[in-house]
Length: 176
Image (cartoon, rainbow, N blue to C red; front, side, top):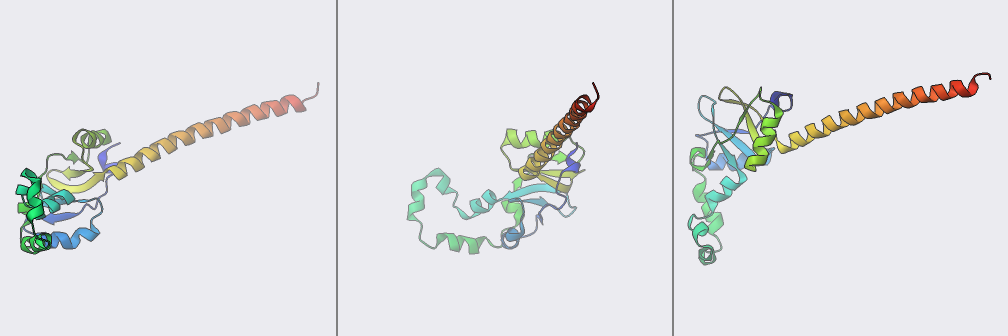
């Protein structure tokens, strides 16, 4: 099967010119913990994850020396939220490193997730986002495939058992 056969065709999207404040407002509606970033031509140029949002609010020096966190005042986080509201998405986003084409095989999306330890993959047609394949959809597909396979075995056994039962009935009921 191809990616387009299982993808969600309504990924969450935001523009590079939108602000951090707008991003935060739409977070309650985000389905897969990732928002794809598009430019004015609707071409995929980046992603914003929950981690990217938190990075905006934590000072860069905290990554260098954790002990500096203890000297921050109690209201630092709230103050940083307010200060960051006008940042553009372009300043916050990560560049897109991985994507799949809608006609790629499903295994490519699965492999990208496993190898790169990511939760979802954007699906593109050309450079435009047309969908998303998150792990949840892949797992649902696995379940569907295994259920179909199991049902075939069950149906086969049922048919085989009925044939066997009919032969036994014929043997038992036939005159000597």
